[in-house]
Image 1 (cartoon, helix red, strand yellow):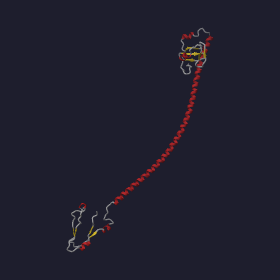
Image 2: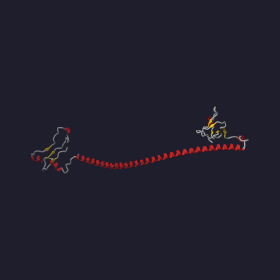
Image 3: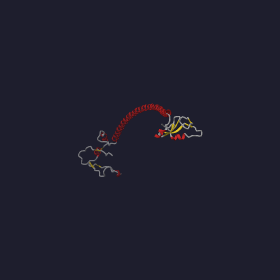
Image 4: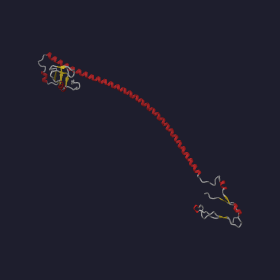
Amino acid sequence: MVCNFRKCRRSLTSHAWVTTCSHAFCVEHGQREFKRNAENSLICPACGSELRDEFDVIQADLKPSETFKSIVLAGLKPDTIMDVAMRAMSFWSYQVEQETLYQEDLAKHAKEKLDCLEEVNTLNVQKLKVELETCKRKINSMQTDFNKKKKQLEELTARLEEKTRQIQKLTFQIGAQKRKDFCLPNFEDKNDHNNQEKCFNINGLIGKRAASEAFVFRPTKETDNSHRICSPKTPVFDFRNKSKRQAFQFKPLHS
């Protein structure tokens, strides 16, 4: 048996307070609830029944000694003994039945709570499934956009590489053209005929000179020696004792 006090439910092992309304209570709650007042009236905490008689509530020993067992019903008539035993069995049956109903009520409430939780869980699962499907669609859409962006990036990278190669090619061509423009002119190329026209011809001067006159060509003296180009000891060109006159062309130095 257990204490019939609603908030106690303590197991009864050695002593208990029992009432004629078939309820049992632990020693702590029995001493607190069953105190005689001036009117000599008590109230059962379990069912609210009035306990007016002196023996409507007693403190029972749930583990009686052998002496108590041998003397408690001694001298009573068999029908009285059977009546007492039947009432004791009815008290026990009532306690078992009440405990069964209480446990069934607990199981019922637990089942209702479980059903409610299962329903809530089902709704949550459905909600999560909907959110999961939405997330999957978003992921697929983002993956598609990512693939498009990746393809565009690859195309732009290829175009950038092509433009870079073109820029390098043009840079190389510009450098080559600059080097070509800054090269010194070659007098031996195809424009040699034009360059020869600019040479100074001294054949006329040789024909007009006197027979006894020695024609000597000396370079012009420079007034500013700081910018002298030729050597100060320039060899003298002497045209005397020449049996045959040959055409001689003087090419000025290219500065």
